[in-house]
Structures are given as C-alpha cells and as structure tokens.
Amino acid sequence: MRHWPLFSLTITTPRLQLRMPSLADLDELAERAAEGVHDPADMPFLHPWTDASPEERARGTVQYHFGRWAAWTPASWSCPLVTVFEGQVVGVQELEAVDFAVTREVRTGSWLGLRHQGRGIGTEMRRAVLHLAFDGLGAETAISEAYLDNQRSLSVSRRLGYREDGLARNSRRGELAVQQRLRLDREHWSTPPGHRIDGLEPCLPLFGAVQGA
Image (tube, rainbow, N blue to C red; front, side, top):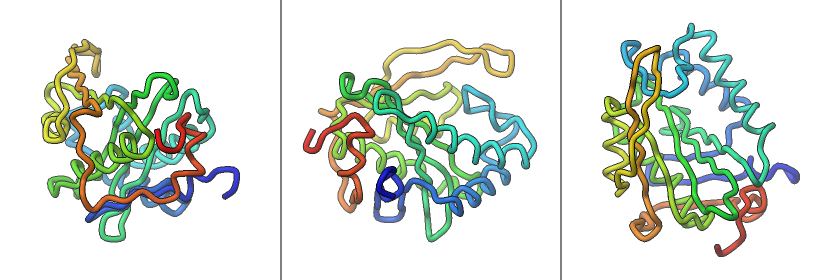
C-alpha cells in the first residue's frame, strides 16, 4: 500500500516472522487472545485487558490494532507486529516511541498465546524487534517494564542484556504491585545472526527515522 507502507514491513529470524497484521492475521491473533494469555490468577499487564470474557478479549484485540493504526504519527507511534511461528500467528510484539527523532528511545511490550509459551519464542520475538529498533531505526535505548512477579518477562530482558533502571509502584487489581524498569543501551547490543528486515526504507518517515541513522 503506497500510503501505508508498514504493511510490507517484515522481520525474519531463524524461527519467526514479525509483520504488520493483515485482517486475516488479526482474526487469528484474536483467537490466541480468546484462548488465553496467562494464568487467570496472575496479571502481568498494567492495564488488565485480559480480565474479560474470551469474546471480549478477541474483539478488543482487533480494536486495539485499529486504534494504534489510526493514532500513528511520526511524533508518537506504536507498532504492534504479529509473531508467526510455523505458519501460525502466536502472539504480538510491540515497539513504541514518543518523539523518537529526538529521544532515540523505544519501549517494547508483548504477549504470547498461552499454549505457545515455554519454547523460547518470547525471547526471539523481543530480539527481533530490538534488531528493528537498533539496526533498522537507529535507536540508542530500549526500555522494558515488568512486575516483579513476572519472572518470564524479567528473564527475557536480562537474557538480552538489559540492566535494571528503577522501580515504579502501581495499583493492580486494587492492590499494590511493584514494576521493574529495565534499560538496554545501544553499546550493549549485538546484531544477531540470521535476522533480516524487509520493507523498512519507505516506512522510515513514519517512525521519525532516517536511512542510515
């Protein structure tokens, strides 16, 4: 699409492809949300969007992506990419920034269908989007946040070289929950083998980035 080249953006890793979802991809992603993302006794997200019926989670997943597309500007963008493993949409990996042209800082967030967890997919999809951020867009810093009891997310960050960068206190389901902020600077990033970005150049102005940054 000439006026929305993001639909041609893909990141390929040894096992995964990350891409801007088609309508068919969104329908499949909605099914993953309906099937479940985490143990109902836990809440890994700041906004408890999974505290809803399967039908509401599915519909909300589609609406969320429509909203992100509609709100996108070069000064404030959120890029949720579906993750495809063995031909199936299994989750979403998001990259976002505010005033990226100035700050060169991005944030990441993700979720993975419950039945696809435990196979290293979460680490590989985060590494893929960091490849986009550092090697494709010229980011200087990547930020991630996770509650102290979300050991899976914290383990992914530490495995990829993030360092602790402060704490935040939040209300989660009406109770105090402490969130760990983590930071990965460009100097601690190494380009991973077997990773490729396609279709990026026409998208760069939408990210507030320039070729070769």
